[in-house]
Amino acid sequence: MTTNPTEPLPDPDVVPSPGPGETPPDPLQPEPLPGTEPVLP
Image (tube, rainbow, N blue to C red; front, side, top):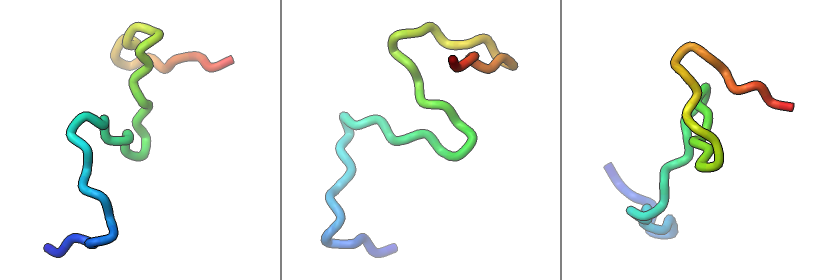
């Protein structure tokens, strides 16, 4: 596997963006219970 030299190395302190179908963790709100979806205004 080759890496693009122009691409910066991933920062270990940076949280990887969520994949498709996943919601990013919200530090301001508690984690929703499994099987439930957060209601967006």
